[in-house]
Image (cartoon, rainbow, N blue to C red):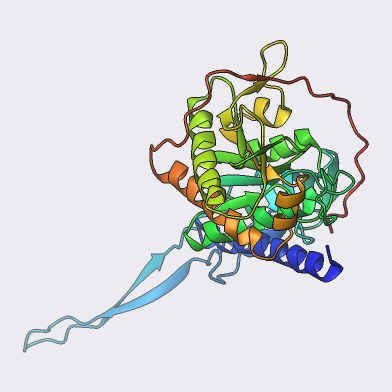
Length: 359
């Protein structure tokens, strides 16, 4: 993709992150230091912030008695001592934050130097400032990133870029409707799978959706090959997968002049390894109710060319946002989960993780 377009999407990612912070409920009128810096001792000046105290004050109150006509009643001055009691509300240490470069991170604890956090590689680092993020409702995980571009389309479009663009568009739609999303990554950098999972669980969100585009090319089909993977044994994961599949599939199925590709068992389904466990760690490991969405086949010549067009991102972001909203606000179900699970044994192995600048 053109560098200018990539830069634009990076700016939008930062805007979404900032909007997530700006919309955060503020449970108290805390100092600005609670937002970006480690907690400080409460001050002792009456400046209107939390932790403010005032010194005991002496208030003179003058009362005048009504005297008889035959005598003069003296005026009496009574001193009443009023004490203002200082109350301090301390917010708990946030579990998540956004760095000054717009990188979502898990937060460990405040330190004298700043904040101890976990970077996208899962490595502990200390940074000077964070912007705490609280009360997230849904985590959006743009698949791949950085040295792991995922698949590529016929135009050279990288899956990692497309996943991020779609995730940002979904986040914007959800924010416009009053929901609080969080992206696991906000730029073209690599993030460990385990750290994506840890970020999602630290958010304590209701749902996590990992967004992908498929490869290799499957058989030609007259229907879209949309796939959504659910976590074994989690009925809410199956419901989330069904809603995502229904909304995305129905949107794509209305399009003309696209040669679709699809596996025979495409749909909302489980993918398990030979031992019967969920094959993909992004589905298996999170404690958060989750689903992994493969929108369609970027590697397919016809589909891949369509995905490179300007209108594609907004087109597909809409049904994803609708499915998430429906999941969060209703008990509705979408496409039924296929009874038969697909068997797949992905190759594993830990990758080297390039360090990402946090500030």
